Image (cartoon, rainbow, N blue to C red; front, side, top):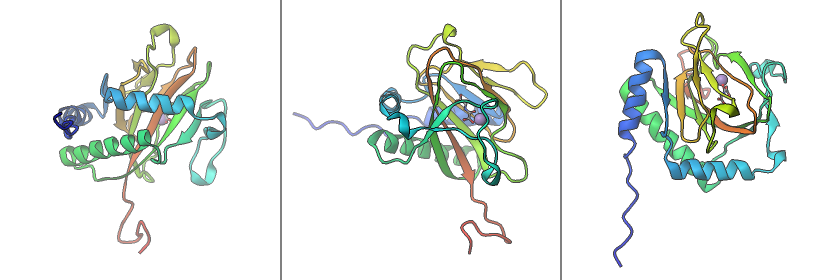
Length: 219
Ligand code: OGA
Ligand code: MN
């Protein structure tokens, strides 16, 4: 029997280039069916099987001022460490996206962190930005959805606002395979209440905070 062909690497380059073009154009990108199907399915299987005690109620605020606020957000999160095959494949795929974006946009993205999020029925996340100007080392946000067969009646849309003045927004259905990326400081967004459990992965690419005055890591 002939040997199994090696899995194609680099097959996502066209997609990554399209995401880079979207980001250059408007600061955000919404791509349906972007996540490779096998990867989405294995992440979905993993998140759905995680024991309840793996999740923590999500907080708001910066490191020194971190607090729970159910009026702002009600989801529960579980950080992805990369130990399982699904997580390792996710880290590898987002790593290739990072390299492509650095090549196309010269963003200097350096590291990546991500967590699973579960929004129970009625949970929401009020309008917010993911990074604050001046202290930003979160540069690019990424959200991937893990809900097969999600329809309009299920709610839970992500609403992206083009800038601080935009009140109308663009609604994104959190259907499995859809990938949203946006500039963390520039694009306000919110999560509307869902009618049934809603799974996503939220992640952030950071730049290295090095400067002449302060090393990151310290020199
Ligand atoms: C976040 C976030 C959006 C989503 O975690 O900061 O905005 O659709 N998530 O899960
Ligand atoms: Mn956010």
